[in-house]
Length: 228
Image (cartoon, rainbow, N blue to C red; front, side, top):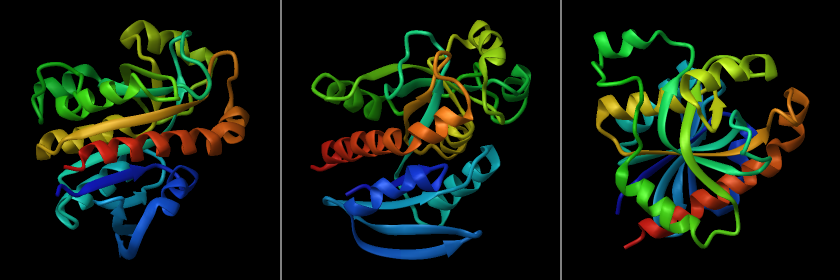
């Protein structure tokens, strides 16, 4: 049975997983608490890393090196960029990029990418697409971008013009980056807390708990599909 790392950015995104977690054993590494146990019959390690790319990358590398996870799923919340994305829609990224990193950094230097976009596991993406057809939640597939800022309407147009993403957050691409160089399958599942119509940190704070619950429910449903 494959071991799955479930990596959230914040505690509100992490808490909905705890009721599903059996035989919870907590290990502290790099000031982070890793909860190791079972969700259904799937061995998992669940944690929140703290916000931003570096925190997410630290957690992802520890999941691989210290806990030997075979798969990493990034679960949590995001802001909408595309105007068709509504509050509490869930975006599962079919490609990911940084919106605040110069394009040649990843193509001319390590890890010598063919483009600026990281890709999820084809197998996990196919499982998610299959699940989406019967899910009670609205699930969208498209581009997600990552950068170290909370996006307001003044920044949306420039980001959309460059990448045409469905969503934006502060961690996804960093985790995808770590998984890419380690050849570990990855999937991102982010539920929307704020949009151009419902913008600002106050909407994120108001909607984060409900959005996090939806992301966790979708993630747990996909774990069941991993069970032989």
